[in-house]
Length: 384
Image (cartoon, rainbow, N blue to C red; front, side, top):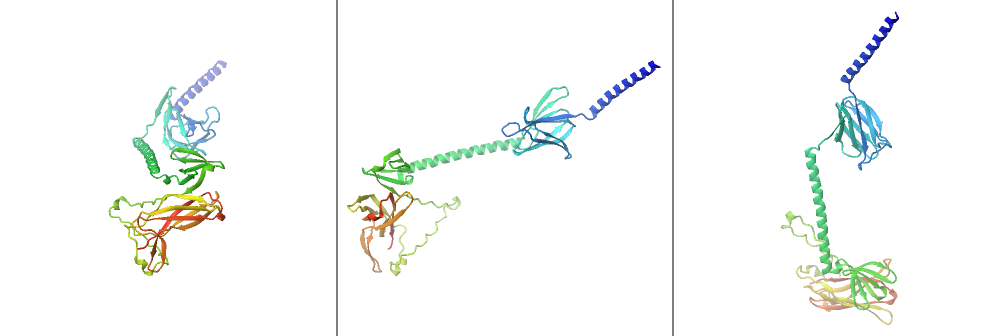
């Protein structure tokens, strides 16, 4: 009886073992499971810790959620017991988002997601076969995307070269212009007590010295040797832009008429100066400066009409800079020229015929006080 019971127990154990082994083989064939693991990195290639990674199946259902590791294997994650199929792996953080389509077939997958990068399909996978060997594969970039990337790179390269060449052209133009006319870039004219004149830009100054940037380099000038600092910014008229398609047939718009002064005779509106022959008054030499016994300063010089028309009421306007805070004082003096009587009966002695010269003199009274420098403009009227 005991032998019979013992035999029954042995048979039942063998049956259970055989059933377990058979059911395991059936489950393995019907539903093998695999792992999906990898690492979340930023744009610099560093692992990002404590990021939530979600695995979603093709039906949009969440299969699992994992947090990336903080210390050992920073940024790594792993999903276990994943059935074969198509999934979407996504991660989100303040740095950016990342998502990737993955396909689980007959091996474990190891992926790498970059936060803030464009979504891609399985950029790099490391497969583990059933026998334990690894098989690496990298998805190739589509040909169209590769061509577009190369074209974009070449366009950026050409744009950088154009910017560099444009900068060189501007630098050459500025260098050629400054040697022809220093006032085009250096608006300061510094007159020294020995008669020398320095055109430059004041980059530093204190109570004792001036540091000036000039054509020959940086000069350090003793302030006690400076007689006057003249500021005369020469402005250039900007050329009007005309499209290339209509340049040949384009004609500039007529100049607007300026209001005539009241002291001109009534028929002066019919006297418009010719475009081919206009007056042009320029300064001849430098402006001299002297101080009399009463401490009054006198600025004097000479101008010339290099144009083709008579200039009337020629005058020189001086703007005195009294201090470094910007306080100024404006004074005007008329040029001593030839006499001319208009039809209205008004007579002026400040007219300059073409080619004629005239002197001017401005007395700056002592009650105005000392001033640091000045700028000047020459003004005149034109009548037939």
